[in-house]
Length: 264
Image 1 (cartoon, rainbow, N blue to C red):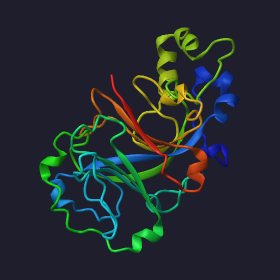
Image 2: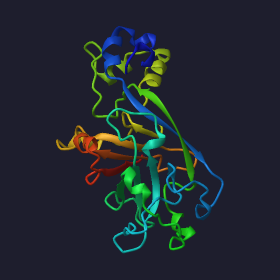
Image 3: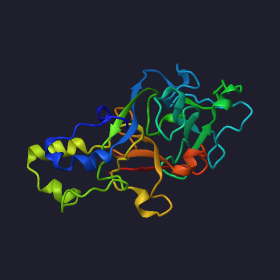
Image 4: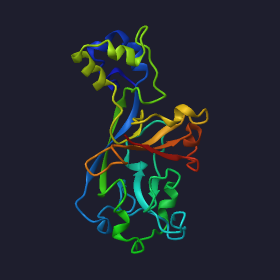
């Protein structure tokens, strides 16, 4: 963040803590997901476009992702970084992909995360996806193709993200919230919100942040958050995430990036 114009306005109930809260604000990319009224088999978006569901870019000379049973997986999410506003620490080009099996997708170890560098996009892609049947998408947490619109925004933090910690005088987050009247509490809750589809920024959870329980993962960066939407839901009002070690992200090494989701 380069100027005061980049910062989110601090509500009156938090003015006494403005200096500290501004330091914790983070830039991120807000993702507007627009559902398309079409079958997946008639995906109108190009193979390299950012999307939820649809057909992926995949080099024809590479082995297409398969699940543990050897069946072809399907694309759940694809992010083309060249379509995004510049976000510090994130790639400016290349494709990030999340593939799911058509059965047992809820097993967090069953998904595959793949990154294609920009030079890979010059390769001839698979264009015939007849090996994937329309009913392969029936049980997935996303049930329509979505195109994406990106906008840079500012995240303010939230209690669910283990990387956010702040004391309000002598009170922690929950004690301070409990001390507020209803009007101030609404302002407080509106300010500390991490919801929505996003790239980067703070993460929202329904059960808890898995990074809070692992020394190796405590500094991991959120690559992608897939939130509840009209045609998107992981379990009961759940949220999906891709995380990566910040050092791996710097060198665009996505081998150890991992997927996580939780629900109510």
